Image 1 (cartoon, rainbow, N blue to C red):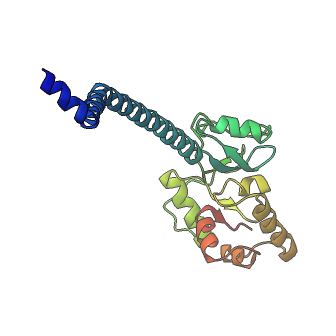
Image 2: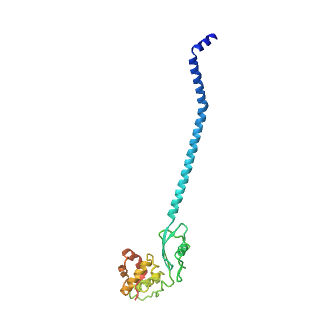
Length: 226
């Protein structure tokens, strides 16, 4: 026993270093795992929060893009008080567009128009006018004397709408043709007044703003009367 005490007295520094080392190792194993678990928990919670925020941003962006794609502009013409271009949203119906355009005129004919239909971006709608498409003479077995009367007879026989006479049409009647708005209808009538009437449908090409493409769209719907 005395020998051990003598050894400790001589080597107390070594013993102190060993004791301190044992304490440090014990503290590491005691607190290390708990600290590691806490760090792991915080990291996991942070990741979960970031993931949730990311999903909300994606959802918000998706809803915004969907709303943008579902809105746009449509054009309404014919028997409404204020023809023109109107903004529409996802649920806007043509009846809403008619109201935005000031409502129908007293000579509007809506029996063949579906105003309950949803209006979509870039669409056009022309509200017909009462009497705009006058009934043509029934087709007979007698050969037509002119190309104009032959075309009219064929339209009646097939059940197609009667052609609009360029020499008597009103602006409202002309606007029932797809692609003819208020300004173009007035240009067609101004040319008729200046030239004393149309001698052929092809004269439409002389109207300002009517090129080959627009003429091709209008030609099947018009004729030239006396």
